Length: 122
Image: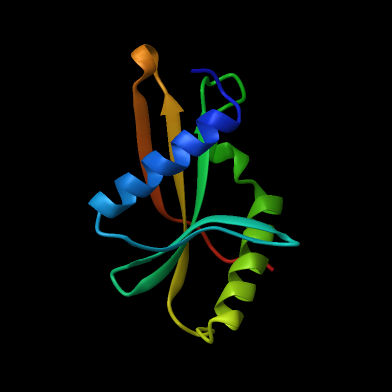
């Protein structure tokens, strides 16, 4: 399988499975608003976690986590604040994790979870 939308969906499925194995409870997936989308919202050890999933079929464009740049962090922060406001959870502990999924040789997926990958951006 090469990159593209199929790899993105496969990556999100594998990320969700990995998070569940690590004790995360998935609350919502693919939460969208006009400002963008949050891939996964979960709860882990009493903390609300906003998860960005990045999948890559090769290292040609650098490591997957490099795609979560300052602009993406600001957008995710806005989306997270919007979600917390809608749910009446403003002020509750929250963090941002990044999950990378790389397609390795023999169609093997390598998944890595970066807990607390970045701080909320203004």
